[in-house]
Every structure is written in C-alpha cells, then in structure tokens.
Amino acid sequence: MTHRVVVTDKLSEAGLEVLRDAPGIELEVATGRSPGDLAAAVRGAHGWIIRSGTQVTAELLEQAPDLRVVGRAGIGLDNVDLAAATRRGVVVMNTPTGNATTTAEHAISLLMSAARRIPSAQASLRRGEWKRSQFVGTQLAGKTLGVIGLGNIGRIVCDLAMGLRMQVVGHDPFAAPELADRLGIRLVDMEGLLAQADAITVHVPLSDATRGLIGAEELSRARPGVIIVNCARGGIVDEGALAAAIDRGQVSAAAIDVFVEEPPPEDHPLLHSDRVVTTPHLGASTGEAQVAVAVAVAEQVRDYLGEGTVRHAVNLPSVGGEALTRLRPYLGLAQRMGGLAAQLVDGPIRRLRVMIEGELADTSDPDPLAHAAIAGLLSAFADDVNAVNALVVAKERGIDVSVTQRSKAHDFASLIRLQVDGAQGSWSVAGTNFGDDDPRIVRINDFLLEIVPEGELLIHTNTDRPGVIGAVGTLLGGREINVSRVQVGLHRQRGEAMAVWNVDAKLPDEIVDTVSGLEGMQSVRRVRLP
Image: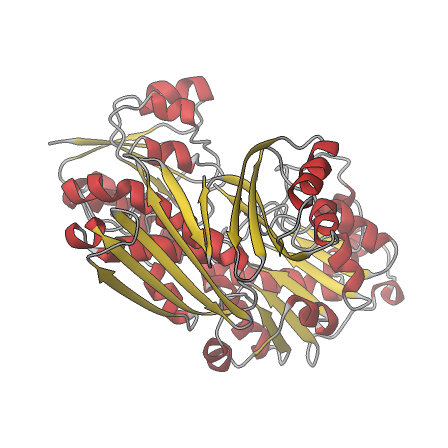
C-alpha cells in the first residue's frame, strides 16, 4: 500500500530525503498554503508533517478522513488540537530531544546578552556613540541561576550554567534528590528559588498549571535586580507584569524569545525597553537542530505508517488492534486520574501505585494504563513526557512506580486505583467507566463520589456541618460562575465531608482563597483537567 505524506511547513532537505527514499511513501510538499488550501492538501493524506506554522484544527482534521499520523518537527504542540486528533484516532508525535541542546544554548546566550546589555551597547555604538559608562553589566560567575523545569532542556541549561561557574538551584515538583545530585544542583521550592536566584530561566511546557507561573506576585517576591529569561513558551511569564517590574527596577533585565502573540504587536512594551533582549522565537533555530528534528520526524512518520512503530507519541501508548479498542476508554480515564492526583498531592512525588482490578485486570495488559496514568501525573511540569516514555521519565525523576492486578474489584466490574505518595502526604484516586466511554472518579481517599473528570474542578474537604455547600454555592453564584455538577462524599466516623464542584469557567485565585477562609474548611484545591 502507498501512503501519502504531506508536509505543510518548511522542513530540512535531509528530512524530505528520508521520505523520498522510503518505499511505499508518496511525498507532497505543500508549504505556504492558506487555511482553505490546507484542507485540499491534507484530504487523502495518511501522514501530515508540520512545524509551528500550521494550525492543525478540528475542522482540518475533519477534512482528512484517511489521516493516521501527525508529526511535529519540534516539541511544542500548541498548534495541534490534540483532543480532536485523539477522537479521530490520529496519532500525534513530536521530536522532544532534537532541539534540546540548541534551545538550552539560546537561553544561556540570552542570559549573557541581558546581563552585559550587549544589544543596547551595539546599537549605541552603531549610532556613533561611545558611552561605556551607560552599559555597566552584571558578572554571572558566582551568581545563582534558578532553573524552573528539569526536563531535557532544563538539565542542559544547568550543565552550561555551571560551566560559567554559576551556582544553580532548580525547581521541579517531580524531580527527586537523586536527579539533583547527578546534576550537581540544589532542589528548592518556588519560594526558595525566588529568594535565592539572581537570574531565573523557565523550561516547562505551557499548560493551565504553568500559564502565568511567573506573574506579578512571583516577581515581587524575587530578589531585587533579578534577570528573567523565557525561551520556553509565551504566557509562562506574564508579559505585562514583567514590563511593570522592569519599570520599577525590581527586575534589572529580561531576555524573551517567545510571546503570547507571535509576532507581538508593534507597541508591545517589552520590544521597546533597553533592559530587554528579544528574539523572534529562535530557540530551535540552528542548522544542526533543523536537520535533527526534520530527520527524526520523517523517520517516525515513515516507521509508523510502514510498520506501526510508535515513538514519541503524545496521545497513544504502544498498543494496538483489539486491545486498543478495549482499553481506549480506560486510557483516557487513567491519564485524567493521574492529572487529578498530581494537582492534589503536595510536594515532590515519591511513589505511584497503579492497581488494575476486576475484568480489566483479567483481559488487559496493565502497562498501557500505567503509562497513561504516569503521563497524566507528570504532564503539568514535563514537556517531554507521553504515554510511551512515561515510565522512563518517572524513573529519571526518582518516582517509584509499581503496577499490580487483582481479579476482584469491590463494587465495580473494573476499577483503576492510583495511590500517590508525596513528600507531604498521600492521596488515592479510583475510577471506572459506567458505559463504553463514560468515565467517573468514584473515590478520593476515603470519600465515595461520582465525579465527571473534565474541565475546572473545585475540591474541598471540611467539617461535616450544615451550611458549607450553601456558602460555597452562593459564593460561586455571586461571581457568576455556573456549577454543572456537585458531588458530596461523607466520612461519618471522622465527621468530615468532601465536595467536588464541576464549574463552567476558570476559578480565579480569590475564589479559592475565599473558600479556604470559610468556617470548617480543611483543604481546598483547584484542579484543571482536559
């Protein structure tokens, strides 16, 4: 069978040659197309290779009924509708390691440029000026660099910074002390990083958990004169808050490669400050990286279409055929359960227990379910994790993972249970499917519930007393936040209750703070699930 592969963004010639030379592959290069023309280009395609310039939307996927795989040359998948691709059974792959070194080098280059004010000094000299005293910089040797996110790129940044004789502290909720020992850095919490770092660089994916990770509050708590670097994704650092902090002198300099809106508007405040170094999303822009990611994505798409081999898939574990049909509803459930547990537990995660019970244990390989749960657990702070490499990433971060099966499941035909142990306590989550694909969380710790695991959730435990549910409902209604479902579980022996609210809008911080202050409240969590 011949498989048609269409490439809609510029790809290195080395990658195109891989596809031209592959038996059974018919290659079409369709770059520079409008959204309307893209629909015609991908119609009839089996494989689709993109970079960051193409938006893979649900509408375009509907126009490509034969599509089996989308390959992204690079890491970021902001331009791919993953949910729509998954629903249509389209595998989405990226190339998480091809540009790691290049991006890390760019982060360090920007840090040095900002510290020494090199672009401003060069611009002054080109104007015929010789104003050495206006460009007194900052020495990096001996200073402390705070690295947020210790994935592939973050680890290389640590190594490069230590080569400059900088002290390095790292923050990553999923990093174990063993990883820090290997890197030669100190692990700290966010407060510790803000208090100690003379410069901060972020290397996490953009998600609901990391959007605005460095905002006005964090910048106000940072060391006076801190330097901020963002080569990850626009939106992780709040651009307005950063501009304000530079204006008042709290931040001495910044280096920004990525923006919320790309290209940014001409009046963007960060483009016109001589304290800010800006580049047009060049983190992966070296010849070596372009070749590496092009060859990698071409080989991945070729091998998947020709052999069914899956590498670096972000929405499909290594399972297929009849087993995949049976497991697919539970794979999505396991991933959401992992994402829920990650947002409940406090401190670094040390251990994950995955327990498969009932009919599911008797008829299925537990590994894909375990990998899906781990991927959900780690996805908030790891840009290179998916169901294929989840177990490897967990081991790298020092998380002890075990998987068990049991033929009996109390109260349900099939059940998945997760036990997550963090540095500051443990949480357990259990879930099942009520139909072919009707997932529910049925237990959190000792509380029996029936939760639809999607969207924005407000979860609180409190003393079991009259008026709590009414007070929270009134508070949400007063802020015009619609409640689609609320579930309450009781632990009568302890006199405690847990309530889980599904709401139709993002919960602002002040809502969480206000609920936390209600009489009888013990814990409050805001959880966001896909």
